[in-house]
Amino acid sequence: MKKLGLALFATAVMASSAMAQVFPVDTASTTTITNVKADIVAWGVVFIGVALTIYAYRRIKGLVR
Image (cartoon, rainbow, N blue to C red; front, side, top):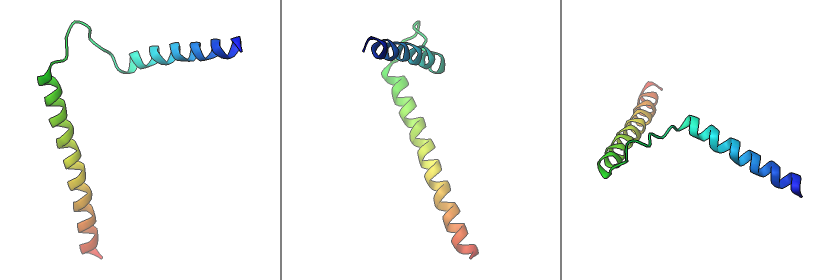
């Protein structure tokens, strides 16, 4: 049982350090509501672009047939 607990703890420590390298956080700056709003708008534009691209692809594919 001790080995399982140690293995789980080691996995959690390694995962957290790996995530810290993938998603670096700048502790000097703080996230503001303005930044969050800008990110939401940017992701919305991306999702709308992807949806329109898929729609156009299907529409053109249907016209070509």
